[in-house]
Image (cartoon, rainbow, N blue to C red):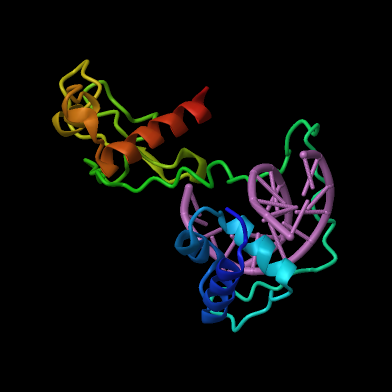
Length: 174
DNA sequence: CCCTGATTCGC
DNA sequence: GCGAATCAGG
């Protein structure tokens, strides 16, 4: 497509109306928005009302130095920090027989060993509820721990918190 | 990721 | 002169 007088006029009109380059390109057809922008600049009509974004330019930008041979653009994208903190919520409170919470020292074989809390911050204990001797967890936690593949499709936030706690425990004890 | 205009430069 | 590629930013 060539820039005939008519097309140029249409371009001027649409540009004056505040249409974006891509919109104009679409209406004119046969050209890309880049073509439109390029033409607009050549015609010397860049600035407009400001229908879209003002977006000020540093002007003196190193600009692009056409580098077809350039391997690739390193451009490091802001990295997201790993994990702030385990921060486990005690979804499953840890009741206790006497007045203390079950700790690694008081944990009995017949107690639920479901970890609760963050070992790193000290507020950590085990569920401690009754569990079948030899069984790792109480009935409630056993259900959380041993979920059928099918139902595990979507973990509950409780289960996730618990798993986090387990991971944290291992980090500390090993 | 969508979009915007701005710029450079091979054609 | 043209416009793809690229940039910088919303």
